[in-house]
Image (cartoon, rainbow, N blue to C red):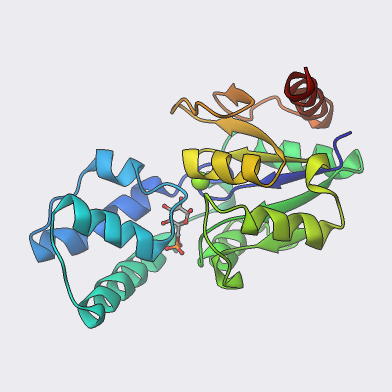
Length: 223
Ligand code: G6P
Ligand code: MG
């Protein structure tokens, strides 16, 4: 039975893709590194340091640790300035109503994100108190596809992983959910091959529908 829903943040609650893109683009342009939307898409769900490593690998470039930290820090300062534009209306379609319906139905909620900017984003969206638990990149856990963040959410919620459904927009996040023993709902335009179910958006979703998705995924796993 579904007891808890764990939301990824970037790409599920709010789309920050373009802000990540703009911030990385400014830095990579300055350094003469190639960066485009296709590379940006590959950074979904991946931590900041791992993202920079992917960008360097694509460019076949090696740099020292100090330079690495300097670029990652500058990217984040620029990204945080852009996050200042976020408003509650930027929440993705259906998210607000879904959170409210889950609460009303007695299903616990959490945010499980690799982002160290989670507190700032939740504050901008006025969602700081909307969830029963938040585990993010500041927890010092391994980032997705490792299941650590989602398992920590289950512990914080006091629920067994098999009673949790994760909502994710990235392949790394779906892999993390499955590795945690949770059911995984993919959202967005990018097809996620390991998701138990894929939806274009969360518009019109509610607690009953998510419980049905969770149960169906469990039956398939057993069958
Ligand atoms: C999310 C995003 C990634 C981002 C990561 C770290 O998972 O999908 O694109 O790299 O968070 O974000 P941060 O805000 O800590 O730089
Ligand atoms: Mg995401």
